[in-house]
Length: 156
Image 1 (cartoon, rainbow, N blue to C red):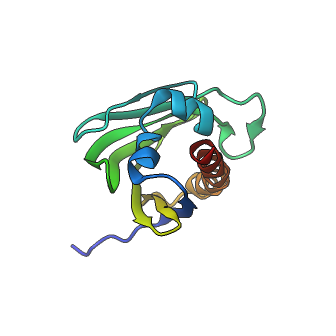
Image 2 (image 1 turned 30 degrees about the vertical axis):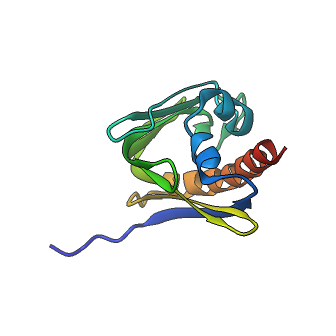
């Protein structure tokens, strides 16, 4: 059997004037997540086999392909290094309406530099449906905006 290739992927990178520990910690701290990612609640355990679950309020408007946005993103933390990275596997987006989308992988890496820490976010899936295409388009836009809020929060 041949090696399968990833069909969908998003990648975002940003330099933030903060430590890697502060940046990665903000992905697990419920109060920080409310501030920069606008979640309504979270259960995020920063250790191998920990839960990584985020919930957003469902939108009032409906996307033609996805239905209402918001819902729950959840998976299992497979690796966590507070100085460098974490990896969430077997992740799913549970839409407010419709079927779950996944499984997906979610990975955040961070490396310290002279002008700040460079954070890379990558989410991927082998899903090939039109719904997955739309999901990755919407999530990429939203994540870029959210990472800018993270930068503002950590640099102020």
